[in-house]
Image (cartoon, rainbow, N blue to C red; front, side, top):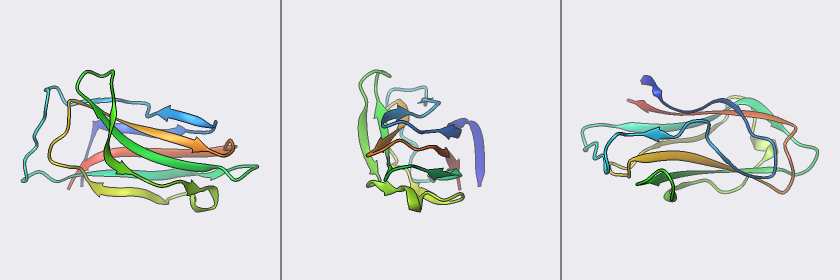
Length: 130
């Protein structure tokens, strides 16, 4: 696996309060519609780097979104359901999935905390070439 610092969405990003939270980094692929072609296999990895905890029954949803203008974002169809706090243990792989070959110039991840706040929890998210 090859990892590039410019392909990191989140590095030990704490996500605690109810609502939507953008990844620390928004990736800019530099062209309007990058087409990486079938010969390139890019894999999105989202994993728990610090176990999540909650005084309630908090949940986390992960949604990958892209944009042509870094303003209007839409899901690219890679989205989890609500993941319960009990399942967000350290080292848990939330997503490990190939990216589509075509997407728009900008990409980010939106983490949605539902039901209750988390009192702890961090994630790593990145694209790796395999």
